[in-house]
Length: 295
View 1 (cartoon, rainbow, N blue to C red):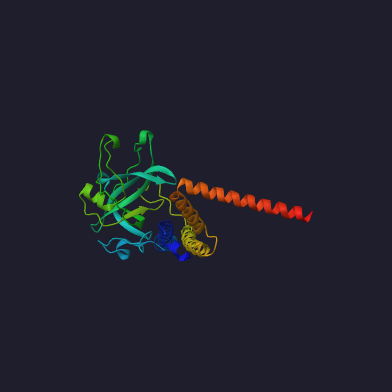
View 2: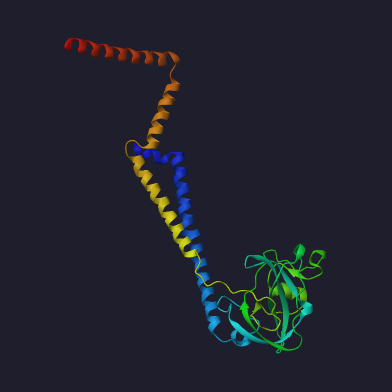
């Protein structure tokens, strides 16, 4: 019965591999790319809105103590207060426009008594990976326009540190208000605020994300196509094996013949070979006599 090949270990392993791959394509890889595409669309929409909307006071956009989410991110807000450069932290291991950089994070005390974290922009890495010298923020009360950003998260939850390698400058691995709050002892509100160009205290302003859709949607469709092709290939080869001349069937027949041949004694094998030769010789002799009779 040709259906027996479906129970062979090699075939079962093939089916299991195809099904696992198809499951990953349909329920893991393609949804992951669709999610990334949705995130990119949300980001692009927020950046586009921020380019045309006038900045609004911080508390009217985000009440005190409320952490920003994707709907708030990139919104421009105005804040009035004073920089606290003595509590400053430099974020290390950053990449800006494809090159290594530092980002300067300075706490800012607002006139209504809140503390926020301001990202003043980036610095290019100096010799030996050190932080170059840079301008201090202005003193006194200033009004700034910045963009709301969500805190980054360090999986290891590392604190800011300063040692010989940092030249005594406090450095952190992420841009995170919680990290700077621990190092400064200030009750900094969640999120941070990225300075626009031409703002008091800005260094090199961080560039905005590029407004392109990215390849995520096409990648998602590709994973779906891969899953469909895997299942279609399995169906094709299953039907092919059910027909005469299937590869697995032929391999099984050859293996069966070899197994039966190994079970025979040497005398049996020699006798069979001799019988085949005798039959072949008799056939040849018969054909020769037939040709002679015709002549």
